[in-house]
Length: 337
Image 1 (cartoon, one colour):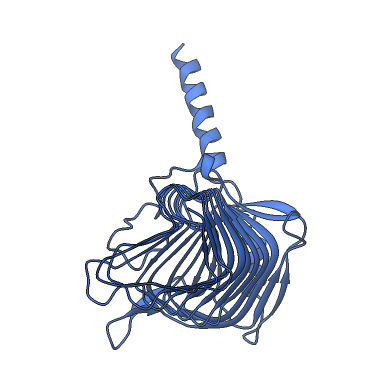
Image 2 (cartoon, rainbow, N blue to C red; image 1 turned 60 degrees about the vertical axis):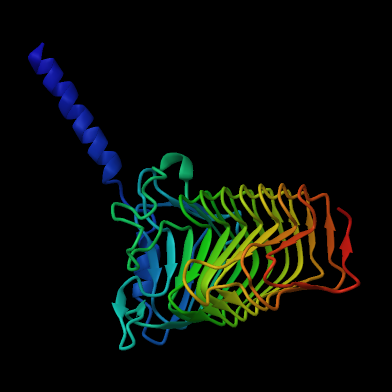
Protein backbone atom coordinates (compact mmCIF):
# COMPACT_ATOMS: atom_id res chain seq x y z
CA UNK A 1 0.00 0.00 0.00
CA UNK A 2 2.85 2.34 0.87
CA UNK A 3 4.62 1.46 -2.38
CA UNK A 4 1.47 2.15 -4.40
CA UNK A 5 1.05 5.55 -2.75
CA UNK A 6 4.68 6.39 -3.48
CA UNK A 7 4.26 5.39 -7.13
CA UNK A 8 1.17 7.60 -7.46
CA UNK A 9 2.99 10.49 -5.77
CA UNK A 10 5.99 10.13 -8.06
CA UNK A 11 3.74 9.93 -11.11
CA UNK A 12 1.93 13.09 -10.05
CA UNK A 13 5.25 14.82 -9.40
CA UNK A 14 6.58 14.01 -12.85
CA UNK A 15 3.26 14.89 -14.46
CA UNK A 16 3.27 18.28 -12.76
CA UNK A 17 6.84 18.99 -13.78
CA UNK A 18 6.18 17.90 -17.34
CA UNK A 19 3.48 20.58 -17.48
CA UNK A 20 5.54 23.21 -15.67
CA UNK A 21 8.63 22.53 -17.79
CA UNK A 22 6.87 22.10 -21.12
CA UNK A 23 8.80 23.44 -24.07
CA UNK A 24 8.12 27.08 -24.81
CA UNK A 25 6.48 27.07 -28.24
CA UNK A 26 7.58 30.68 -28.81
CA UNK A 27 11.30 30.02 -28.52
CA UNK A 28 11.68 29.80 -32.31
CA UNK A 29 10.51 33.42 -32.53
CA UNK A 30 13.11 34.60 -30.02
CA UNK A 31 15.79 32.62 -31.83
CA UNK A 32 14.81 34.06 -35.21
CA UNK A 33 15.01 37.61 -33.83
CA UNK A 34 18.33 36.89 -32.10
CA UNK A 35 19.76 35.54 -35.36
CA UNK A 36 18.99 38.74 -37.27
CA UNK A 37 22.03 40.89 -38.00
CA UNK A 38 22.53 44.12 -36.11
CA UNK A 39 21.09 45.94 -39.12
CA UNK A 40 17.74 44.20 -38.53
CA UNK A 41 15.51 42.14 -40.77
CA UNK A 42 12.16 40.35 -41.08
CA UNK A 43 10.74 37.47 -39.05
CA UNK A 44 7.59 35.76 -40.36
CA UNK A 45 5.52 33.74 -37.89
CA UNK A 46 3.44 31.07 -39.62
CA UNK A 47 -0.15 30.21 -38.90
CA UNK A 48 -0.67 28.50 -35.56
CA UNK A 49 -1.37 28.89 -31.85
CA UNK A 50 1.87 29.18 -29.87
CA UNK A 51 1.95 28.92 -26.07
CA UNK A 52 4.59 31.18 -24.51
CA UNK A 53 5.87 30.44 -21.01
CA UNK A 54 7.93 33.64 -21.01
CA UNK A 55 7.97 36.96 -22.82
CA UNK A 56 9.17 37.62 -26.34
CA UNK A 57 11.44 40.69 -26.26
CA UNK A 58 12.16 42.72 -29.40
CA UNK A 59 15.10 44.95 -28.48
CA UNK A 60 16.78 45.23 -31.84
CA UNK A 61 16.10 48.16 -34.12
CA UNK A 62 14.93 47.88 -37.73
CA UNK A 63 12.98 44.67 -37.11
CA UNK A 64 9.72 43.54 -38.73
CA UNK A 65 7.68 40.71 -37.18
CA UNK A 66 4.72 39.52 -39.25
CA UNK A 67 2.09 36.94 -38.49
CA UNK A 68 -0.06 35.18 -41.06
CA UNK A 69 -3.16 37.14 -39.99
CA UNK A 70 -4.77 38.14 -36.71
CA UNK A 71 -7.01 35.04 -36.82
CA UNK A 72 -4.23 32.74 -38.00
CA UNK A 73 -1.21 33.56 -35.80
CA UNK A 74 -1.90 33.56 -32.05
CA UNK A 75 0.69 34.08 -29.33
CA UNK A 76 -0.90 32.78 -26.13
CA UNK A 77 0.45 33.01 -22.60
CA UNK A 78 0.76 29.45 -21.32
CA UNK A 79 -1.27 28.43 -18.27
CA UNK A 80 0.02 29.82 -14.95
CA UNK A 81 2.93 31.62 -16.58
CA UNK A 82 2.34 35.14 -15.13
CA UNK A 83 4.49 36.96 -17.65
CA UNK A 84 4.15 39.67 -20.28
CA UNK A 85 3.74 38.17 -23.74
CA UNK A 86 5.31 40.61 -26.22
CA UNK A 87 7.71 43.41 -25.24
CA UNK A 88 8.98 45.90 -27.83
CA UNK A 89 12.02 47.60 -26.33
CA UNK A 90 14.61 46.72 -23.74
CA UNK A 91 13.39 44.79 -20.70
CA UNK A 92 16.25 46.19 -18.58
CA UNK A 93 15.88 49.52 -16.76
CA UNK A 94 18.60 51.94 -15.62
CA UNK A 95 18.60 55.39 -14.00
CA UNK A 96 19.98 58.11 -16.28
CA UNK A 97 22.02 61.18 -15.36
CA UNK A 98 18.90 63.20 -14.54
CA UNK A 99 17.50 60.51 -12.25
CA UNK A 100 14.85 59.20 -14.62
CA UNK A 101 14.29 55.48 -15.08
CA UNK A 102 14.82 54.58 -18.73
CA UNK A 103 15.48 51.48 -20.76
CA UNK A 104 19.12 50.38 -20.95
CA UNK A 105 19.08 50.68 -24.75
CA UNK A 106 16.71 52.50 -27.07
CA UNK A 107 14.89 50.74 -29.89
CA UNK A 108 13.71 52.37 -33.12
CA UNK A 109 11.95 51.40 -36.33
CA UNK A 110 10.09 48.24 -35.30
CA UNK A 111 6.95 46.89 -36.96
CA UNK A 112 4.66 44.12 -35.69
CA UNK A 113 1.56 43.10 -37.63
CA UNK A 114 -1.09 40.53 -38.42
CA UNK A 115 -1.38 38.50 -35.24
CA UNK A 116 -3.25 38.11 -31.95
CA UNK A 117 -1.79 38.14 -28.45
CA UNK A 118 -3.88 36.19 -25.92
CA UNK A 119 -3.13 36.73 -22.22
CA UNK A 120 -5.17 33.65 -21.28
CA UNK A 121 -6.48 35.35 -18.12
CA UNK A 122 -8.76 32.45 -17.22
CA UNK A 123 -5.71 30.29 -16.55
CA UNK A 124 -3.62 32.88 -14.67
CA UNK A 125 -3.60 34.24 -11.13
CA UNK A 126 -4.80 37.85 -11.50
CA UNK A 127 -3.02 38.72 -8.23
CA UNK A 128 0.31 38.20 -10.01
CA UNK A 129 0.11 41.23 -12.29
CA UNK A 130 3.88 41.64 -11.98
CA UNK A 131 4.71 37.95 -11.86
CA UNK A 132 6.35 37.03 -8.57
CA UNK A 133 7.56 40.56 -7.81
CA UNK A 134 5.77 43.68 -6.52
CA UNK A 135 4.06 46.19 -8.77
CA UNK A 136 3.68 49.17 -6.46
CA UNK A 137 6.81 51.28 -6.26
CA UNK A 138 8.82 49.04 -8.58
CA UNK A 139 9.42 51.02 -11.76
CA UNK A 140 11.72 48.36 -13.18
CA UNK A 141 9.05 45.68 -13.41
CA UNK A 142 6.99 45.01 -16.51
CA UNK A 143 3.36 44.33 -15.78
CA UNK A 144 1.88 41.28 -17.42
CA UNK A 145 0.39 43.09 -20.39
CA UNK A 146 -0.37 41.42 -23.68
CA UNK A 147 1.90 43.95 -25.46
CA UNK A 148 4.28 46.49 -23.93
CA UNK A 149 6.17 49.18 -25.87
CA UNK A 150 8.92 50.81 -23.80
CA UNK A 151 11.78 53.15 -24.57
CA UNK A 152 11.06 53.02 -28.30
CA UNK A 153 10.62 55.36 -31.27
CA UNK A 154 8.91 54.84 -34.61
CA UNK A 155 7.09 51.63 -33.73
CA UNK A 156 4.16 50.47 -35.86
CA UNK A 157 1.49 48.01 -34.74
CA UNK A 158 -0.97 47.06 -37.48
CA UNK A 159 -3.85 44.59 -37.64
CA UNK A 160 -3.36 43.23 -34.15
CA UNK A 161 -5.70 41.99 -31.42
CA UNK A 162 -4.66 41.88 -27.75
CA UNK A 163 -7.03 40.34 -25.25
CA UNK A 164 -7.54 38.70 -21.86
CA UNK A 165 -4.31 39.75 -20.18
CA UNK A 166 -4.05 39.97 -16.38
CA UNK A 167 -2.97 43.61 -16.76
CA UNK A 168 -3.42 45.78 -19.88
CA UNK A 169 -3.92 44.92 -23.52
CA UNK A 170 -1.36 47.44 -24.82
CA UNK A 171 0.87 49.68 -22.70
CA UNK A 172 3.43 52.30 -23.81
CA UNK A 173 5.93 53.55 -21.24
CA UNK A 174 9.50 54.63 -20.43
CA UNK A 175 9.63 57.47 -23.00
CA UNK A 176 8.18 56.42 -26.32
CA UNK A 177 7.57 58.66 -29.31
CA UNK A 178 6.24 58.43 -32.86
CA UNK A 179 4.21 55.28 -32.33
CA UNK A 180 1.64 54.37 -34.96
CA UNK A 181 -1.02 51.94 -33.81
CA UNK A 182 -3.61 51.15 -36.48
CA UNK A 183 -6.44 48.64 -36.86
CA UNK A 184 -5.95 47.49 -33.28
CA UNK A 185 -8.43 45.72 -30.97
CA UNK A 186 -8.08 45.17 -27.23
CA UNK A 187 -10.75 43.50 -25.11
CA UNK A 188 -11.34 41.38 -22.03
CA UNK A 189 -8.27 42.61 -20.16
CA UNK A 190 -8.23 42.63 -16.36
CA UNK A 191 -7.36 46.34 -16.39
CA UNK A 192 -7.29 48.67 -19.44
CA UNK A 193 -7.54 48.23 -23.18
CA UNK A 194 -4.72 50.75 -23.70
CA UNK A 195 -2.60 52.50 -21.06
CA UNK A 196 -0.03 55.13 -21.97
CA UNK A 197 2.72 56.83 -19.99
CA UNK A 198 5.70 59.00 -21.00
CA UNK A 199 4.62 58.87 -24.64
CA UNK A 200 4.48 61.68 -27.19
CA UNK A 201 3.86 62.52 -30.85
CA UNK A 202 1.98 59.29 -31.55
CA UNK A 203 -1.10 58.27 -33.55
CA UNK A 204 -3.65 55.64 -32.52
CA UNK A 205 -6.20 55.13 -35.27
CA UNK A 206 -9.01 52.70 -36.04
CA UNK A 207 -8.93 51.21 -32.55
CA UNK A 208 -11.53 49.12 -30.74
CA UNK A 209 -10.87 49.21 -26.98
CA UNK A 210 -13.94 47.57 -25.51
CA UNK A 211 -15.18 45.26 -22.75
CA UNK A 212 -12.17 45.76 -20.51
CA UNK A 213 -12.53 45.58 -16.74
CA UNK A 214 -10.93 49.03 -16.25
CA UNK A 215 -10.86 51.82 -18.84
CA UNK A 216 -10.81 51.72 -22.60
CA UNK A 217 -8.01 54.32 -22.60
CA UNK A 218 -5.98 55.16 -19.48
CA UNK A 219 -3.30 57.86 -19.91
CA UNK A 220 -1.06 59.43 -17.27
CA UNK A 221 2.50 60.65 -16.49
CA UNK A 222 3.61 62.83 -19.41
CA UNK A 223 1.36 61.40 -22.08
CA UNK A 224 1.50 64.47 -24.31
CA UNK A 225 0.78 65.61 -27.87
CA UNK A 226 -0.89 62.41 -29.09
CA UNK A 227 -3.89 61.71 -31.32
CA UNK A 228 -6.64 59.09 -31.15
CA UNK A 229 -8.50 59.00 -34.47
CA UNK A 230 -11.52 56.80 -35.26
CA UNK A 231 -12.45 54.11 -32.82
CA UNK A 232 -14.93 52.49 -30.48
CA UNK A 233 -14.73 52.32 -26.68
CA UNK A 234 -17.70 50.20 -25.65
CA UNK A 235 -18.83 48.63 -22.37
CA UNK A 236 -15.67 49.22 -20.40
CA UNK A 237 -16.16 48.46 -16.72
CA UNK A 238 -14.97 51.83 -15.41
CA UNK A 239 -14.58 54.91 -17.64
CA UNK A 240 -14.18 55.13 -21.38
CA UNK A 241 -11.17 57.48 -21.01
CA UNK A 242 -9.11 58.20 -17.89
CA UNK A 243 -6.70 61.14 -18.33
CA UNK A 244 -4.27 62.63 -15.82
CA UNK A 245 -0.92 64.41 -16.28
CA UNK A 246 -1.84 64.49 -19.96
CA UNK A 247 -1.60 67.51 -22.23
CA UNK A 248 -2.50 68.38 -25.83
CA UNK A 249 -4.17 65.09 -26.73
CA UNK A 250 -6.85 64.99 -29.44
CA UNK A 251 -9.68 62.45 -29.23
CA UNK A 252 -11.29 62.55 -32.67
CA UNK A 253 -14.25 60.61 -34.08
CA UNK A 254 -14.49 58.18 -31.20
CA UNK A 255 -17.69 56.43 -30.15
CA UNK A 256 -17.59 56.10 -26.36
CA UNK A 257 -20.60 54.08 -25.31
CA UNK A 258 -21.98 52.21 -22.30
CA UNK A 259 -19.14 53.06 -19.92
CA UNK A 260 -19.53 51.72 -16.39
CA UNK A 261 -18.82 55.19 -15.00
CA UNK A 262 -18.06 58.44 -16.90
CA UNK A 263 -17.46 58.54 -20.62
CA UNK A 264 -14.26 60.54 -20.02
CA UNK A 265 -12.71 61.44 -16.66
CA UNK A 266 -10.04 64.17 -16.41
CA UNK A 267 -8.18 64.83 -13.18
CA UNK A 268 -4.92 65.60 -11.37
CA UNK A 269 -2.97 63.46 -8.92
CA UNK A 270 -1.90 64.59 -5.47
CA UNK A 271 1.27 66.05 -7.03
CA UNK A 272 1.52 69.55 -8.52
CA UNK A 273 1.19 70.17 -12.25
CA UNK A 274 -0.43 66.84 -13.03
CA UNK A 275 -3.77 68.00 -14.46
CA UNK A 276 -5.08 66.90 -17.84
CA UNK A 277 -4.81 70.20 -19.75
CA UNK A 278 -5.58 71.45 -23.27
CA UNK A 279 -7.13 68.22 -24.50
CA UNK A 280 -9.71 68.24 -27.28
CA UNK A 281 -12.74 66.05 -27.88
CA UNK A 282 -13.38 66.54 -31.59
CA UNK A 283 -16.50 65.13 -33.27
CA UNK A 284 -16.94 62.43 -30.63
CA UNK A 285 -20.09 60.60 -29.59
CA UNK A 286 -20.37 59.90 -25.86
CA UNK A 287 -23.52 58.04 -24.92
CA UNK A 288 -24.99 55.67 -22.37
CA UNK A 289 -22.45 56.40 -19.62
CA UNK A 290 -23.49 55.60 -16.07
CA UNK A 291 -21.91 58.88 -14.97
CA UNK A 292 -21.30 62.08 -16.94
CA UNK A 293 -20.34 62.24 -20.58
CA UNK A 294 -17.21 64.19 -19.54
CA UNK A 295 -16.27 64.66 -15.89
CA UNK A 296 -13.45 67.10 -14.99
CA UNK A 297 -12.85 66.61 -11.28
CA UNK A 298 -9.80 68.91 -10.87
CA UNK A 299 -9.17 72.49 -12.07
CA UNK A 300 -7.64 71.35 -15.35
CA UNK A 301 -7.43 74.11 -17.95
CA UNK A 302 -7.91 74.54 -21.67
CA UNK A 303 -9.98 71.43 -22.40
CA UNK A 304 -12.58 71.73 -25.13
CA UNK A 305 -15.30 69.94 -27.08
CA UNK A 306 -15.47 70.77 -30.79
CA UNK A 307 -16.92 69.75 -34.12
CA UNK A 308 -20.04 67.64 -34.45
CA UNK A 309 -19.77 66.04 -31.02
CA UNK A 310 -22.91 64.45 -29.57
CA UNK A 311 -23.70 63.65 -25.92
CA UNK A 312 -26.81 61.60 -25.21
CA UNK A 313 -28.31 59.32 -22.59
CA UNK A 314 -25.54 59.78 -20.05
CA UNK A 315 -27.01 59.10 -16.60
CA UNK A 316 -25.57 62.18 -14.86
CA UNK A 317 -25.73 64.56 -17.81
CA UNK A 318 -23.40 65.72 -20.54
CA UNK A 319 -20.66 67.40 -18.47
CA UNK A 320 -19.39 68.06 -14.99
CA UNK A 321 -16.61 70.67 -14.73
CA UNK A 322 -14.75 71.56 -11.55
CA UNK A 323 -15.93 74.95 -10.31
CA UNK A 324 -12.39 76.38 -10.46
CA UNK A 325 -12.04 75.92 -14.21
CA UNK A 326 -13.90 75.98 -17.50
CA UNK A 327 -14.29 73.75 -20.54
CA UNK A 328 -15.11 75.37 -23.86
CA UNK A 329 -17.90 73.80 -25.92
CA UNK A 330 -18.49 74.87 -29.52
CA UNK A 331 -22.01 75.77 -30.58
CA UNK A 332 -22.07 72.82 -33.00
CA UNK A 333 -21.92 70.34 -30.11
CA UNK A 334 -25.20 68.57 -29.28
CA UNK A 335 -26.14 67.79 -25.67
CA UNK A 336 -29.32 65.71 -25.55
CA UNK A 337 -29.32 64.92 -21.80
